[in-house]
Image (cartoon, rainbow over all chains, first blue to last red; front, side):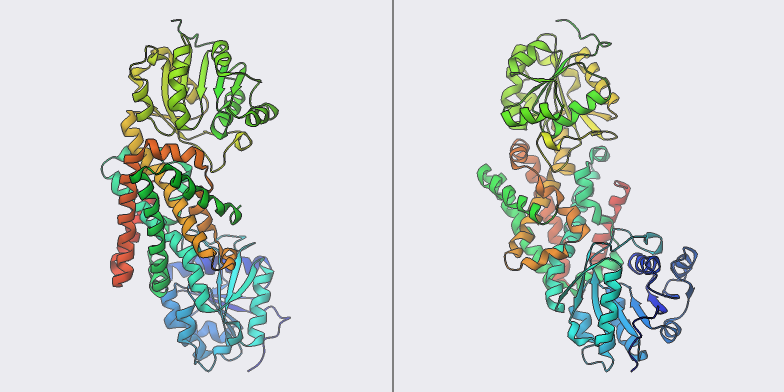
Length: 288
Length: 288
């Protein structure tokens, strides 16, 4: 097993040319961190679009892409990662394999006993938008955001080091934790936001059947809370599925919190309602 | 009762020099729509701040401000409006009185039989931010947003006309409906967003007691859904109080929608979860 030459500018494969894979390809090129970028995508039209937008230099099959590159970046939905990560690891020797998925415990468990486990680095860059596909990929993504790297002691030192340098070079803050802790935290600060936003959209769309006029009134506040409801089902169902227990815990907690507001209104307990809002205001410490 | 001269640039009073009143004062001045702006505020320090920021030309008592001006704009929290609107109407003859409150049914009911009811125009400009006070007032507010004008046939034609021209001149789209319809719609497209955001903040802050590290991970999506949780309790408790029944209806509907997501996860019904998300995606029609 040859260690990757850290001073080189490696050719890389990006598997999954959507919002995340596409934006990372743009970013790695902006920073001059890579040589050729070979793209792989199950969708012919997405692959073509990625090529036309210049996200990648050429399109290849997964096998060919792995054979020709030193770094393989997996940016597919998490259900696809589940099946493709072991297959990719079967084919690598010296390469670094990095996934960008939103769940980590399920995936790391699947490859726990794999003879090439060390070549794999489990990461989750905490950046995204509500759009998807290669046309959604943007320049300047990831900057100033946090990337979580999981179970780092299970990765080979050279693979870990290259991955750290890559994230550092694209302007991300690196945080390390185990895969289980990641999944709990992600349920709180990302997954539940999507659930509430989907549910809020359905609440209002249900009403709209009765009255189309309502939407002229949609305020900036409404747009902000409901924005994530535009997110792609093919991406999010597998995330909720893989992080099912943690997301269920947080939904339960969130419904309990909503019930407190409901109870205040029912009982006309305006003092406690004031207190609940003052509690919520403490979020100012967290988001500027 | 003298009709207001529509070609004049009237002196105006702004009662309540916070985010909304302050931003409207800035906007009216930007557009050259008014002469002197006399400010009124229960808080000495807010009044002073508004003067220092140049939001108003001078500070006066409510009585003095009403006596010296042709247009009186009420921009206080809705509980204060409840008590101050009848008092203001007692003192006007020719002036136009416009309120900017987020609820309308309660307020219009209170002054329904008032001998000067015609001088009052009930409005709700659908613009705001999560910040409050005179320092939160900004230039360029309201532009391109919708303002709801309620029960317009209860207002004198000249008062209505001046108000319409004012909102048109500051770039707002005018929509008319009765006060009850406004309050139902506002519950769906504004008030519930604040409830979900407050509840989401409390959900996550509850967790944070156990683990401070969680917040490095807060993503842009989380920030978007939780942003409104920074909103001011003194403004929002009276809104929820005055719009209690409608807000309760929407909270119940929202909890029911959340339970559908919960049920999908519990029963591992991934097809129905996919369908719920696809339903929510239809919000793309509404928000761009």
